[in-house]
Length: 573
Image 1 (cartoon, rainbow, N blue to C red):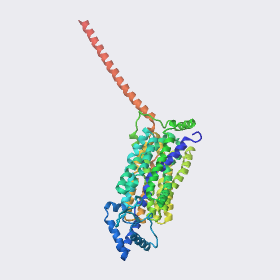
Image 2: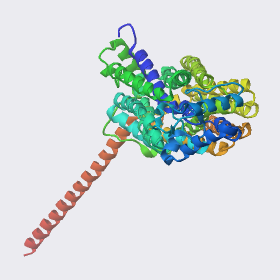
Image 3: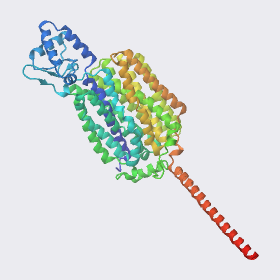
Image 4: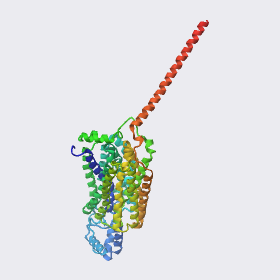
C-alpha cells in the first residue's frame, strides 16, 4: 500500500461494486428480449397456421391439437405463439421447415433462433420435453412492464435504512452483503420464471428490496474517506454502473446468441461472489481502520476533512432539520428527474431497438450499452474539470453543482425531445440516445456530490431519503411504457414515452438551478448541537439549583421569623 493510495484501491472496488449492482438491475432488461415471444413471431406463426395447405395442414393441425390438449401451465410455459420447434415426429419437422421456407424466402429457424415455439408435443411413443433454457414465454407488453418495473416496487423501502445501517454497522458490511445477496438471487431467476411470471415478479421485488441498501450506504464511506475537493472525481466511481451497463449489455447479448439467456444469470451470481471476496479483503470503513494505509495518507485525509466529519453517539439524527431543508429537497428533485430519464432509457432501450428498429440481439446489446460507456467517460472528464474549478476557486461550490445539474437534467432533456421527434431514423435514434445518456454523467459532480457537501455526517441518510423518492420512477416509468405500448409498438407511442421523460428532466433541472445550494448546513455539526444540548441541560440544572436555594432561603427566613416571634413573646412575658 506504500506505492498505491488506499483511496485509489477503494475507488476501483467501489467502481466494480456499482457495476455489479447495476448488473443485477439490468440483466432482465436484455434477457427478456429472448425470454418472451416477439410480436413479429406471433404474426408469422399466425400466418403460417392459415397458409399451410392440403396434407400439410392436416398434420400441422394434429400437432397443434395435441398441444392444445396439454395442461394450461405447460401450454403457458411453452409459449404456443412461435413456430414449431424440434420434435420427435419427422413428418411435422419436415412440414414446418417447408412452410417456414415458403414464408421467409428460405430463412430457416433452428433451436436457438428467436421466434421458436419451445414446449411439449405428444406423439405415439412418448412425450418429449424441451430443455428449460430453450423455453419462451407468452408475456404481453403489460406483463413485461410489470416484470421490468417490479425490481423497484420495494427498492425505495430500504433507502433510508441503508444509510442508517451503514452509519451504525459500516458500509463494508451493508454495501457488500446487499450486492452479494442480490447476485446470489440471480441463480434463482431461471427457475421461478418457469413457474409463472408472477413468481418472477416476487423474486425481483425481493432482489430490489435487498439491493436498495447499497447506494445510501456508500455515501457514508465517501464522507469518511474523501477530501471535499476530490469528491467529484471519487463519486465517478458510482458510475461504474454505467460501464457495467455498457459492458454487460453486449456481453449478455453474445451469451444469449451463442448459448441461452439462462447462462446470463449464472454468470451474474458467479461474478458477484468473486467481487464480494475482493471487497472483504481490501475495503475498510475508515482510514484509521485500514491496516495497510500509509500514515501520510491518513494525516492528509483527516486534515482535509477537518471537523466536518466525526461521530457523536450522544447526539441523534436531526430529522426535523433534514426534512425541512431546502437544499435536501432540491437534491431529491434533481435525482427524481435524472433517474426518470436514466431508467427510461436504460430499461427500455433493448426493447426499443429490438421492436422499433429491428436490431438483432447482438446489435441490441451493443447499442443499448454504448450510451452508458459514453456516460462514464463524460462523467470522469467533467469531474476533473469540476474539481479543478473548485481547487482554483474559479467557481463556487453551489454554482458548480448547479452547472452540472443543468447539464445532466436540462440539456439531457432537450436531447430526449429531439429523440422523440427524430428517433424514427435508426442512426439518429442511437446518436441521440447515446448523447442524452452521456450528459447524465454530470450527475456525479451535481446532486450526488452536493449531498455530501451539505451534510457529510448524514450523507447516507440524506441519500436514502433521495433514493426512497427518486427510485419511484424506476417502476412508474416501465408501467407507463407498458400502458402506452400495449398492442401498439409504434414510433408514435414511443414518442410520448420520450416526451414524458423530457418533461421530468427539464422541470427538475430548472427547479434545482433556481433554488439549490451546496454549502455545509448548520445541522450537520455534531459539536454545536452537542454544545447546545449541554447548554440547555446546564440551564435546566441552574434553574433547579436556584429554585432549591430560594426554597432554603425562604425556609431559613421563616425559621428566623418564628425565632424572633418567640423572643418577643418571652420579653413581653
